[in-house]
Image (cartoon, rainbow, N blue to C red; front, side, top):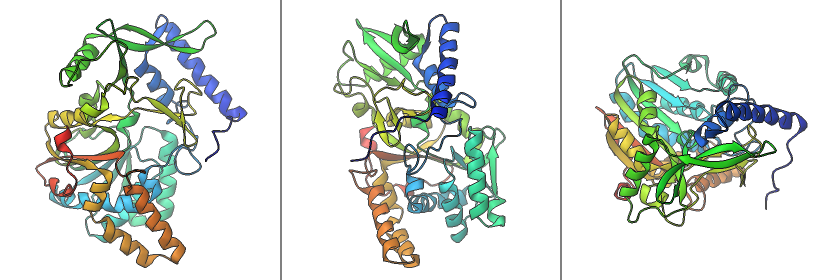
Length: 395
């Protein structure tokens, strides 16, 4: 069993204390409480202090979690394979936009795959809000890609507003969007907020939900077999439709692909999931207290894939498909990519590692079923990338 998270260093504790102080100031300025989504936004994205905005190492074995691109280049090879046809159909000037570039591992492997298949996008753009991660991505890609390939990479300050064609790809991005928390109290929808106790510690509080959150919760409830019972607490990503419209910007022709962990709505809001899906991670461990060590731990909530389907279609795209990550990778030639990688491996140890990576990406007990893929298309064919394991009937 892995060791529990170690006590943060003195510098890390001081960093967390600065962010804690900033959040405390915001709570006081707001009259004693802020919505949970605001707390999550500050904890993750406060400039220079938030978990994703500051310089702590987050990805890989030495970080707090491992994403599929960091686990294996096989993931990027399969995703690039799936997106090659819509990328070509989008036209000669097609661009590839990756939301949240992580360590740069996905961009590195995907660009090399696109180059090998003769389907390089005119530009590979990374929309990364963290200045620190931008610099790490730049250093990695400049060191590992050829100069000609690296020249195609750019970093965006915001979505592309001018008309453009191409691909939007996001792996483990939606789960990190600041989410509203709600609770049912005496039949009414209340919003969960964050206040301070007598010693300045963060505590939950509740207040009547605003009209937007109440309408969102009642709409969800109307699609469930039974209404929410008193005390039921969960999340609703109210801003998801607006976020989708914002990140696609002026996209005219192309495809969208999202890979993340979550559930269809009927599973997301099961009666037994009565405290929602909110959780925190530090050093590969689940942390019960999402208020502990702000800035030093990831805070995340599962994705309601029914809401994602509604948002994509509502933004004017056709639904392409929805399946488990294992089905998506196997349906996009994982077996062939594994064989090709094994053929180039230096020795049996390297080949064994590749096989283990493929297992972690696809086994139900690992990433295979906890993560799902969902795609959308506009004037291109992307539904062919979902040949196996259709889950759309669950939506």
